[in-house]
Image (cartoon, each protein chain N blue to C red):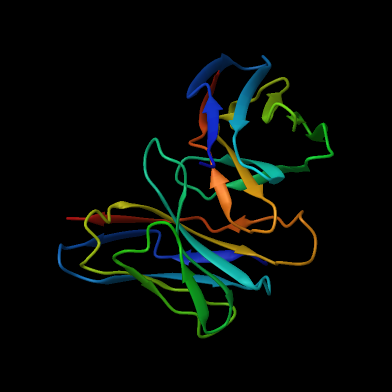
Length: 115
Length: 112
């Protein structure tokens, strides 16, 4: 089936450790995004990429890093510099075809808890 | 500042009843508005996408309206079902950008 796969679904991390969240899509979409979702808040953009080997910071990029070595993959690393990393992380993709009706597709999310 | 505000924050209704969720935005210039449904612990799923020239769009029991002049949108759910229990998120994007502005969502609970 076509879609976006995030893994792991649940992850526990000790303070001071880096952790990488995986995001893979087989939709052949050009753009990929990482969002963070906290209770009572809207989704906030961490990083996005519109083409392989290129990515831009979103609104809350501090303490995070990404790579886009392949079109279908956009892993997110939560580093020890992220002060409050416990959250629900969502990966998304967008075909970026001409026009304004592009649907943004989301993965199922990853829960990260710092213990 | 570009913002999207949703109301109510939460809503409880009985199965079979109708309900309407509101979304007000200040994004300008406006390009399109989307409604998403998000089940607890899952990723959001698209319900509708509307441009400034569209007033109404339906997807099954979900009907979205848009008034681009007053910058307001609503999502009407008809004959609610238990499976409608979820958060409903309004998302707006501006012209010449693919950046999305997310509302904080309305949490709907449908009880039997």
